[in-house]
Image (cartoon, rainbow, N blue to C red; front, side, top):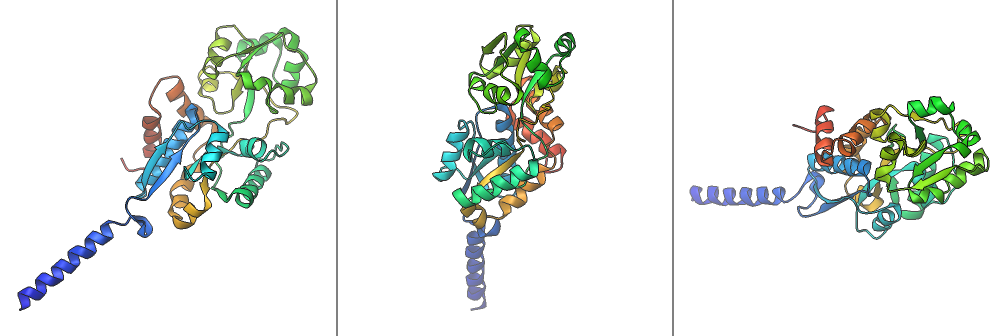
Length: 302
């Protein structure tokens, strides 16, 4: 009789253990997956991998949807509930998504996008990183000295002597040439060479261009010791990065914020320039670069 009772208790304990094993952190059912996406360039691949690795480390199952496309594609995928989160930039949210006027105050821009995204879309901005992947213009040290250029005002004054290289859309963007001309005067360049973004720095360093369109965390800035021209009239808004998450997903799994927020303070311009160059310059895999950084920071177990 006692043996039968013990067997029954053992059977009950086995069933309970199996049921508990089917749940993840916070009672999350196995099979429920957090879908992490990214846009279609190097920095986004690295950040997307970081988010995915941290969530997996916290016990979540993760489906990667990296290299999804540009901002409109990623934003719509969130609204369509096809993804759960991706890294976005405050300046992009302000200008491209919300269509609001530019603002150079980082805290104001963050609070604006945080408030409006929640109100309009049911999306939550987690904590922003100090890094600023702002639109920028850069020159080689030699070029800057030759033309006596350190600011965008200097560049505008000598535009007729300069060849600029950059992506085709920079000729149309409100924070591209039209915006620069609006703030810095209606200058005319000697030439604008529209190229694939991956060819910008090659054109600059080989002498085919004098100025390149850049982003504040491009790895090539540090690697080639480039001069980033000072935006002395405050045209470009800040582009701090943060995870943007669907509200209902975050409500169901608040551990997402607990897993991702500790990363943010570590992402400075210098850090992202270095990590980006590991991929774009040294041709390493974004997943390897992301894991190595997180382990080095103690955010991921080795």
